[in-house]
Length: 431
Image 1 (cartoon, rainbow, N blue to C red):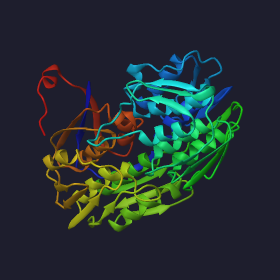
Image 2 (cartoon, helix red, strand yellow):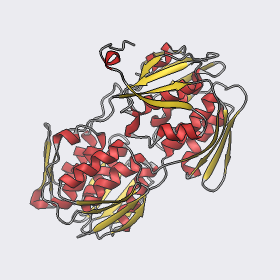
Image 3 (cartoon, rainbow, N blue to C red):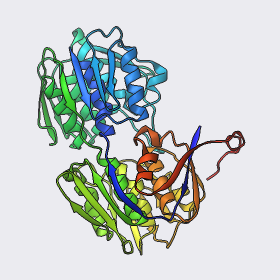
Image 4 (cartoon, rainbow, N blue to C red):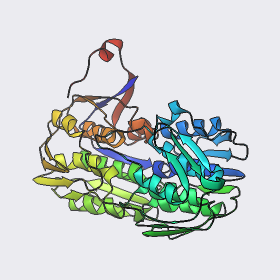
């Protein structure tokens, strides 16, 4: 078990390269199971969620060949089971994409309920299952979930999502790629990684139209063939480094991004007094003066992303005046607030709303990561704080951020990863 040790209070300067999008990669890798051939997938982030998925795919019988750190070839022609290891499935939330992929290709799937982050709310998959049932699948909802398509092949259907769900949109899209007939997903999510999954499947021979709008139409194919595909840059990783510059001050050039994907984050940082200059595939982020208060409400894309809510809250905690944060996607995403308050922040949570009274400084202390994005917020707070901060439960952070220690060091952060001593493990952290 490791922890991060961060000596804060230093502005960030330099350049940082953004990795492939986690939220795209964890869907595209399972989607490779739909392909009757060899997929070459490039720009894959080196994160623990990807490692776990590749292990699952290998155990199912696909041939997984690592070409280099960020490129993998997957040959799924010889899958010998549709039953996913319970131990591995429990490690990652994205394991639910295996249901849609296996149902679509083989007409059956047995997958344990997913794990990954738990930030205090429930992450149900009822909309996923609603879509699969509409397409003719019979589903047993214990643990594992067992799903079988009537007649061995999914059937096209009209699916209206009761709530805008990224996961359900992507999962139903996968199940429909090889289904018989036309599937229409209405009230679909529009996030960039949904478009990326559709582009991946289309490059392998699928017929998907409308991704990025609220209505997606999928004409099922008899089979998909192999090919090559490059995953888009990670919007949330880029936003996290932008938020870090906002909180600490300094100037950082963020490379390998799609500026249009960043508009919802850039707009709020500009309101906070952060300067952002856009080029073709870079953003120059600069903060020299005081941070200003603003209000944030998380919404489905193209609104402000829920996955950036904890990180932006750190900057608001250091801004002048009172800011209001409203969580519009999940019931509760504020477990990190207790840790920020221990560092000197003044944040009060009332249901889905957090009232943030700006303070002049944060102080280093011992904190923990409760989930992936909350962990990123702890890192940003530690970089901005006076003194030394130790962060535990960093396995959550490494689920979604490639080489975060090395990248932060590259822009001037004083951060290191250390082994937790035995006597520290025995002392429970109370927050």
